[in-house]
Amino acid sequence: MTAIPVTTPTASPRRARHRRSPWWYLGELLIWAFLIVMAIIEFAPISWIFATSLRNPADSFKLPPDFWPTAFHWENYLAVIQSPRIQFLRFFWNSLKIALLVTAAQLLTCSMAAFAFARLRFPGRDLLFFGFLSSMMVPATVTLIPTFILIRQLGLMDSHWALILPATTSAFGVFLLRQQFMSLPGELVDAAKIDGASFLRIYWQVLLPLVGPGLSALGVLTFLGSWNNFIGPLLFLRSWENYTFPIAIVNLQGYMGTGNRAHVLAGVMISIFPTLLFFLLAQRFVIRGIALTGLKG
Image (tube, rainbow, N blue to C red; front, side):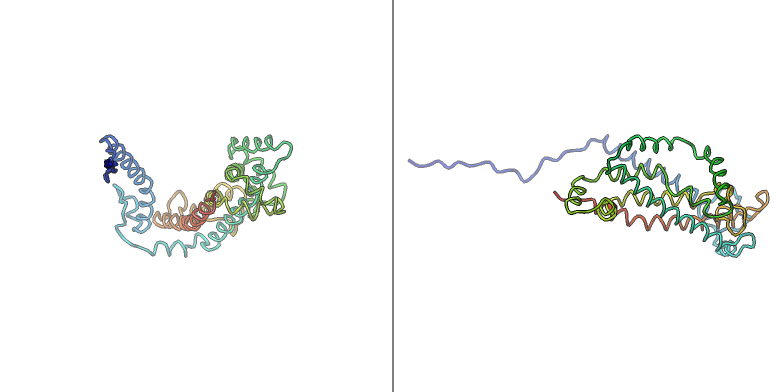
């Protein structure tokens, strides 16, 4: 009796392809069109500021406005640096010093408080955290007068400490970093406790390096807020040598806005540079933080 060979069906090398409907392509096109329009809307004011900062003062109010440089008068930037109306290097250094100190202080205090709220257990923890969140609902302008009275009673008027101390921590920073700490697996803390690590060491060496994205985001937002702070220096500072760069830009406008518009916008472009540089530096730490949070099973 001869065996009949049985042939098994072989899988076809061609796989069935899922055809996308025309509506899918239309949706993608609409999304890209919307993103391009929004990018143009966001970029247009900066492009106009840069283009106008390189023009002659007489062409600053030209209509319709030109969003691309029509002239390249780089001496406008040199005129800002050497302007007799402001002490450029002093004002620039004052803003940079205050912004860096405030940013460093917030990263330290907010991360420590966020670690405590996320990983420590103590009576009244949730109630205290709710109080932090409630303070975010109070507008900053409401606290200006109490802050002014407190700063005056402490004898900190006309000093940079009047701008640094009230900004050493923030409820938003605590909330942001608490969410980052809570997203980390609890096995990391348990393993560190088994190895005999204290809570301070767990915070500093185990968990803090893993919240790089949150620290970078908070650092960028804090630096931007401190660098662009105008009402604070105007309210607490009195001496000319203590003023910051936003005050310098206002002084460039002159009385009743009669100053050189091209010089004013050149000063605005100079003020954008440190914030852009700070963002580019922090972006590297965001990528590193995302890479560090990848845990293998």
